[in-house]
Length: 186
Image: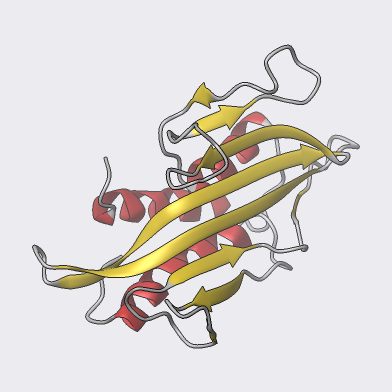
């Protein structure tokens, strides 16, 4: 979400993401590290030119399925950077990379990745990975860019994950609509 300065843009980006995570697991707090051009770590909101890494860290989000004996876990990691949008005259935060991985009993079930600046992978477009053990598990299926909220709504609707509160679907839908309104990609 746009802001008058990098700190405001950062808050406008990260607070809705934290609300979304809280719809599924209210015990996990997002962690962030900020790396300036010289490699030093910053503890405050990032400044222009910094790359920021937001992750659930080793604390995987638990996606509970009360009617099932097998919960899912979700790992998320994003690399973000604030920038000044001269055309609109506001600060924004852009996503440079994302990794969302949903596992069950320690095995990857779904993975959504986008790493256009990767030095290791030749696949630069947004893609999905199928569950381990399937014939095409090591393939990159085109997916288009995807927001965290879309994955969480998929988990609630299709995988019957238990929401952390009664209005979780509405919160996720509202956050996703706001994100779509302000994102630079469509």
